[in-house]
Length: 291
Image (tube, rainbow, N blue to C red; front, side, top):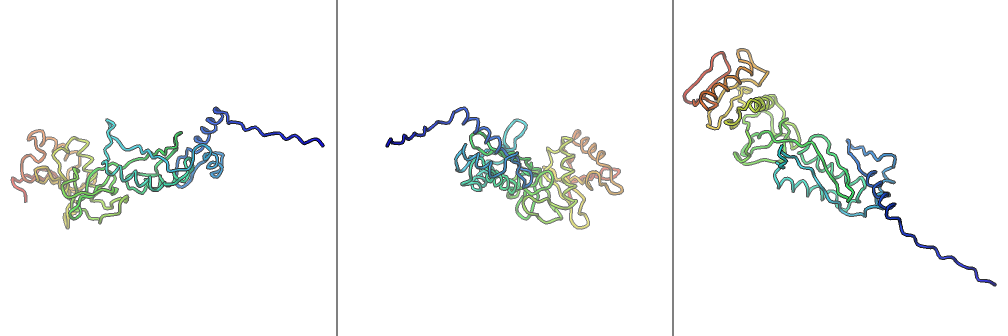
């Protein structure tokens, strides 16, 4: 009886061009922009997406690249230690995650969002070499609020940032006598007094009058809401209510700005070189010494 001939199955190598093309398809499909908690995976289901991606890059802890906030000249302004803290937190959150799957992206976004440094929901995507890239709308420090013996950093919209300093060490303009208590990191500081104070800070900045401003006293008791500008000489300039919220008998914000600009032009000092100045009413009130 003739012995049946067996055929040996040839092992074929994957065409390098096809392999590379499949890898690019997997990477393109796995590039996810996070909007809320919904992940868009194109026409592929998440399970199929992960299986396809796994063929391209093996399981492991992905590299993380964060596009940090910069100044106009490209310099990153965030303190280096804070950058390290955020980066390490994200790396810990994705340890062991499968490259090109959706789970590490989700964890990276949640961790960055909880840092208190970003507004809205960050965006995350994979690169061709299996790196997670994170972009965000960063909150920019605007001032500090003095609470006890600390200066708590806030952004221009009064959201509390995750940094605080000893008194005088923040290199930021400060607010004292804020009515509302300190909120949690990432939450907005309530109260019209601080809102008015930040509005005045913006107004002085816009008009080039911040150089000799150290901080702002928002008033207390019956004087709550009456803002005093504290100069670098330690003197007070009584501004009054917040810009656009003037009380009866007060000059409008534009007139007050004109007065400050004229005083600065003539004396070279925002407070005119005196100890106390009140620019609210029809006439400017000046005292040689502060109260």
